[in-house]
Image (cartoon, rainbow, N blue to C red; front, side):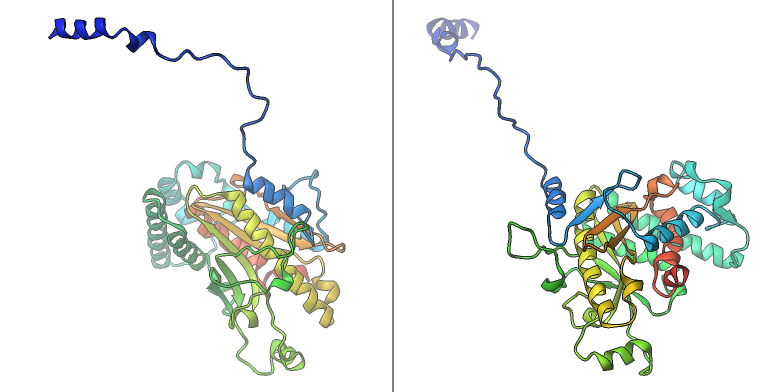
Length: 349
């Protein structure tokens, strides 16, 4: 056998000698790195009409938030890390999420929460269920639809309905924004179209003599939101949520949320011009959340006098504002209390 192999190798010198000779070439001067589509989108949004500036918080930010935006930030910073977790759950939280619990400190816990022992035990069971659901989504690589269900559970436990009985969470994934409220790009005659996944809305008032219903009678056929859906068109959309699976593109979520918020602010501007609250609504902060897997981030958008829209992520002292699920359940109540209509608006009035 070995002699046969040697014979074959000896009779076929071309196997080695006839192989192609590669010549060295100088490096190409053309960059092989492609431009990130999301970075291009962020740059294009700045040249849109109206322009949208997605900026990082801090003194170097190009956008200029007004007094109402800065006031909301002040309220959030003042209460962002103070007394929002029942003291009796401290040990359990540190055990279930030891890495994230490193950032917890004394001021975050309080004793006067109004829960009985049985209610705290029930709340803790619900928290564990949500954490299990979120971890299953992460470990099993589930899609955005599965994460949307986690978001619903977090907001429910965060006390969404306790803050306002008229506050509800609606899916807006399949609904379009009316084109006249969307920004347009200079190179394209068509408007931008970005959809959010969920939106906190104010459900229609039940009493015919309510302020909203009285306004509707005076402005027949005028919708209250920038959406085209039969129901959402007639409701006030308080806060959008853009949801991505674990490992999803955060920057893409931010762009989608910014465009959606810009359309909502344009609708608010038009509504304000029809009534007596024009000065109050101009420059008014419009909150929204991006949720990428376990990471939640609050954003605030506003419309400047020039028409330009600014959008900025809110950064608190706790993990740069992004929290894993056990702490998000408690944090969401704090953020909801300052950004929800009927609650936050009273703080800003």
